[in-house]
Image 1 (cartoon, rainbow, N blue to C red):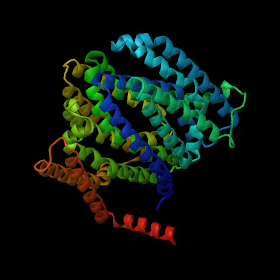
Image 2 (tube, helix red, strand yellow):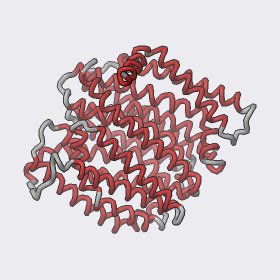
Image 3 (cartoon, one colour):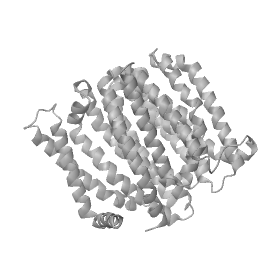
Image 4 (spheres, rainbow, N blue to C red):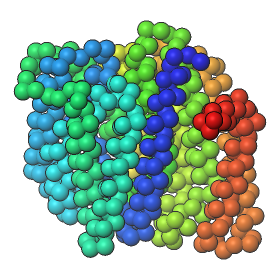
Length: 486
């Protein structure tokens, strides 16, 4: 096994454990909010989440990727970057506080003013742990990172549950997000104190190299996020909070595997790839291995979701959300393409090509913007979803060409890496659909049993197929368990 594979597996173990815990908590939270919130309130969640995403990118300024990518970073530079983050955090707080009426006017929702101002408080606290988080990631200390993230997510969820009994669900959600991000920042800072702590040093001249790398990374991430959140921005503005609520529910259901499962591997990949960025063979091997792992986990979830989406939504969220079913099925295509595109960034940044990422994302943003604006003007969510899927396919094909240029990754090699995960997932999707149809003869559609029956048996069948296709992997797990018991 190559060095990259070994480091990936070690990091994936700890990141995976914490991510599974976080995902379980967030699924419960997601279901709770879906049950208790009105459709328009769920649309407000989409608007607020979009604001947080952009503010957090601005807070980072691209320095995180620069710190991870550089082999050596002096204490003076780290201190200077730390104080820049703190100042930016204060600036974001002031901007959000002052411009909240303007944002509320754009979305035609006056209640956003107070919600955004409450949310802004976290940017006064979260920046203190920004550099420490990336230093922990650079040192591959994913066990500690995982513990912090799982713990803070649990505390945030408890805060939500307690508050939801006394105040409006949307206010409870916003306050829980402030608790989550503020507590993360404090704990990151505390946990890295033994190795490094910021000093009262600020020398902008020493940060020029990091600012140059970070500027492209910041611009790239802003453009990328603008593209991936443009649907929310346009739907919220032109189709209203209720339409956005339906779309946001479907989007969240589909992107949970993408946003929660993918980082188990991609978060580990960037620092690991950066340590081997000059070895083309290792990079290609590591990328293909990472893509296969992502596909084996995400494909069956997303493809299977298309088969059981109606019983899933009816059982978990209730009758009021049934309009989201066709959107979920279309957005599953987007989810699969995003799974496949997600590892690209790790390779591009590891090669030090943040500028290429920016130009690529800028071009795709223009395509997304024009296409989605035309789709939103039809006032039909299904048209918007299909447009998103079509543009995502174009983006995916551009990504394949770019990887061929960067690491000489042939399309045939790539197809070989994802072919088995795709075929296995297709079989399981057919099984899940058949089981759902059979169970409908014995259980009412609103019952939870058709969902448990179809998903449970399909999952067991998938594990069995994996065992047949990858027996050596399962044998390795068994041997590790035996060694652990002796």
